[in-house]
Image (cartoon, rainbow, N blue to C red; front, side):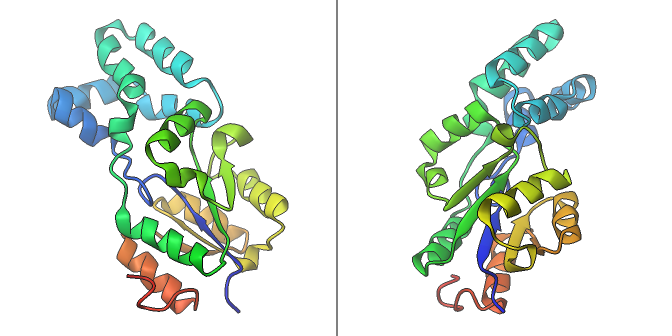
Length: 206
């Protein structure tokens, strides 16, 4: 049987998320590597994604590392430049599914305030049939409870969900619950999977 709902991760599936690339362009690769070795910036971001205040968390981290204060603040002040650009083919797939009446949910590690900022720049983030945002749920993928929250709140059984994410650990956690999954390595592969599942025609998936 066809899946009854499609679940999209957002970062690196619908919008590129490459902080290292951003910092390479601003401060150079050598200094970026040094900063990331000294400061757990992804750990900081996980705290934001878990529900901590975006501004307070980034600025407190910046103050704790005065040698990198200005650069760390960029994670907040120039954040939208890291969350860019949109991946057009993925967005077309989302809209094609919805045009056929197929529910599309988000399941994303995203902060509360940073999601508001992102949605201001990318209005389609308001267009999911259901949103499952880690900051609001106060837990991040790949903890099993975040997948259970989607199941319980949507009322869709695991076997009726198909989920794409760019991280293998997030995919493995969904598979363990019985979800259908697709490791996202580009929109073309995801499009082919949606066709093979009978959700879109080849023409609709272009």
